[in-house]
Figure 1 (spheres, one colour):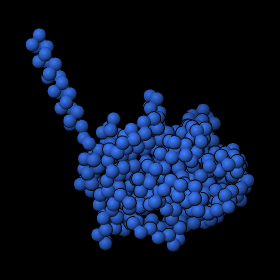
Figure 2 (cartoon, helix red, strand yellow):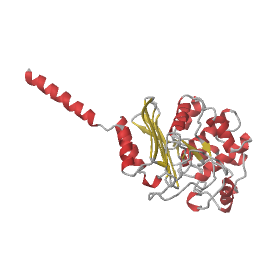
Figure 3 (tube, helix red, strand yellow):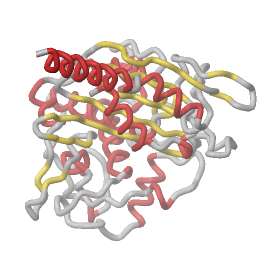
Figure 4 (cartoon, rainbow, N blue to C red):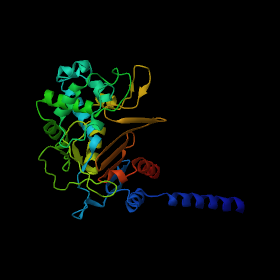
Length: 340
């Protein structure tokens, strides 16, 4: 009997030791910072409770200006969920349908006249991606549209495959402007940023002033700042706290109704029967019934991560202005392991 009791206490002791050895997310973030792999702002929520909320490093290295929780970072492709949300809001107003041809609203090349809004949202339209072909500063949406007219065809037959296309989301931005009669910036501000009180979120345009803005840097901490003016595919600066407000609005159907929300997180069957894991501006993962939605972003010196457990009000948001140094995949793996 004594042996059984002794073994029981040893087992309990080992369990306690194992639990105590589990790293806290704050310690993991600090470790990445100490190794020079992260400079920026992080918010981690588990079941609606704050697990980690911190800013580390500098928003401007040359001036010695430290980053804080209200520092706005360029979020690159994390802007796409805002574009998708705007399209769905217009659909709810009856101003467009997801299976409408994009050419109903804006002038497109002949080869693209039959692609649909839904295909643009899913990255299955076949529209060529401009991003690796342009290095021009101050690049605009119209210049990308003009480039599409200089192309001769689609990359592939619509819905035959998934291929990420920033150009497709620029077309969506143009549709938002045409249908709403407002600039993309004005629409996003009026219908998302202002209602959700996202006080440190900005759609960047020529002349936009962001007082607490992070400047971008490469791995060697040399300036590598954001320098183009496209919208729809990118163009937004934000903070982890503001992105969490967006997360909550999506969970609570504040912006988008339940039906469209379900569609937003639904994977899409391709014409060959394979399933694309991209919904409407979210990569969807179903791990034994545990569903998560994620998007990342990266351009110049910036990198962004937004991972969301859709069932447990849990999310991981990390924004950095030294993107080349940030091993995003390793960071996400380590944090997910710590909050399980």
